[in-house]
Image 1 (cartoon, rainbow, N blue to C red):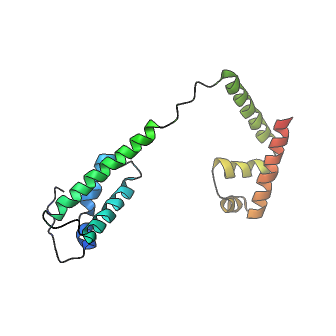
Image 2: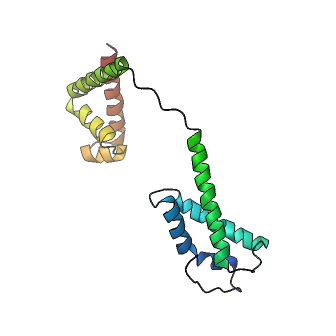
Image 3: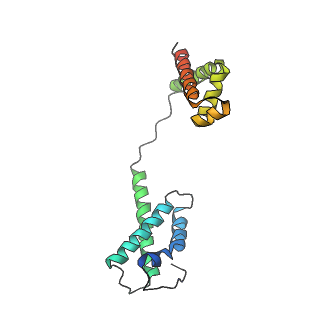
Length: 169
């Protein structure tokens, strides 16, 4: 680790390792990318692994704890990257181009559903809009429309049945 952090060899291993958390976090984020949602998990794994190795006696004190943590961090980053590339190698092949006939059917069904939804009474259309399009919870929809949550569920279910019935025709 490039920063010099004073070492206290009498402190418990957890305290010694936690002093390096910002440095380890920076290194992991730089290697994996800060947009990677797993970087915090990797940092926590490194810290946990370091404490376990110190307690088990793998760290003899021949080098600084910073050097020890640098090695663990480097190896864990490499392991993470290998694991992700292994997953990518076994990823399924992308699907071939979609069948134009299937696409046309899909567009036709979407148009049909849109027409049915537009033909619903406003009380059903509004509930569907808030619940599915705006992704509000049942309670939030109930508050917005000044009705009970139970009534929201009833309207959603009834509207879906109306749509299914109209689309099957």
